[in-house]
Image (cartoon, rainbow over all chains, first blue to last red; front, top):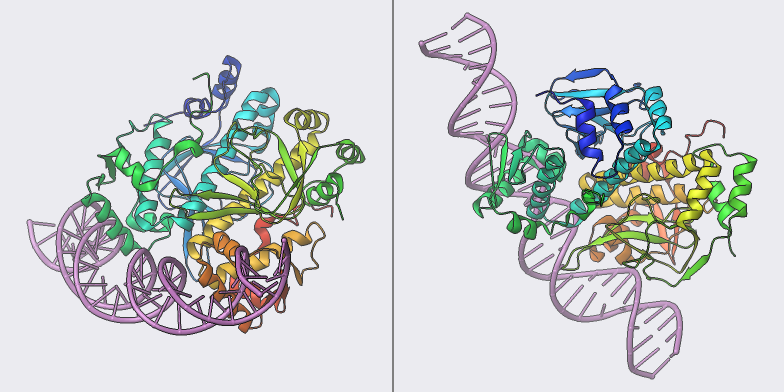
Length: 244
Length: 244
DNA sequence: CGATAGGTTGAGTCGCATCAACCGGGGTGG
DNA sequence: CCACCCCGGTTGATGCGACTCAACCTATCG
């Protein structure tokens, strides 16, 4: 409990760029307001300035889009260390919703603060940009998933991706992780109905690849799971910084 | 025949940012190598430096991903004015393929050139970044599409998006445009089989919303088409620059 | 004129959705 | 303390949207 902005961000960003002592101190100096939200609360209300930037400290959140008739799709997941506003500072509006899945804590960088920070440290700006570009890479992979993988493959892919992302910020050892999602959430992520999520889950369980109970995911056979998912972690760019 | 880099880029970027005379001259001064490619040729071979940036001058291209068994998904379309490398300069690798759909001309900005240009004009850098962020917005919308819209809705959505994007660079009057895609291409874009593309197309034709023949798309009933697609152009950010 | 790429059509199948019921546990209030 | 509720998970029956396979049609081009 209780990561602070600087440590979690450093952990994340150092996968992408090498940061100096000065960059560290710049982040540590930042005293952003910390917001607490309960589960299923919207962070970006209409009218909020999307040019502030929030970083997830604890808990899970998501971006989503919805049609008038209620069909809803979770566009991307945000876990600790992720930026909530993928449009950093530059776009005046956002065309999707953002809400917590669990109760979460986020740290706010006001628009001006982040500009200030970027002007003091180009390498930090660069790291934030890369973080954002990696977000785009994940988005492309996810379009691919939903378009061309079957239900089982998609779910297996998600179960490969999530522990890797959490491991990148020290929240998973690779063999499993917390997974505080309901089957309905999984449905909205995977573009499946709740019922079919349930059955697909049973499928993956019965083959012994994963266990999922009580909000915890255990992976029993990672190579097998990766094979099913045809998972290639390159798109996560977690090994891009050669000096680590 | 033959748009040049400067004019097409200016046309595109000015939707996002107001550029100065100096910025214009900077772009016009650029004498990038122009590459010609036939249809269905790969632009980014493995090993090409993805930190060069190419701009499409004429023709259509796409990003795609593919599974070992051949299932293929077109992740995004590139039309004149679009950047081929959405990771501008910053990521050392790209996890998708890029190839032409028609024969195309692209203009190259070498890695160093573009860095040089950005350092001379921060507003140009900003405009390129926004262009890239808008690309992410389109990607999110496309994940949504494939996840939650039916075949007809998806296709209608595509037929709303494409003329708008082309109109943004002067290649459509809004009532129609060239559409040099085969039904197989459409299938890879929409995540449908070729056969189903054909039937869905007949569906949209028979309701009188669109005509599609001989590589040309005509829209007979835009409001109707938008209603079917539940299309909201906000995600394209074409009206973001208030001074236009 | 045959070859080939793209488009069209029909028949049969399957993956996933929908609808509906039921189960189990944790929290709440009487 | 128990009755109840509600949420999340599970199961079965049924239906539909989209896929696959296979044939055929049409236009273009060397």
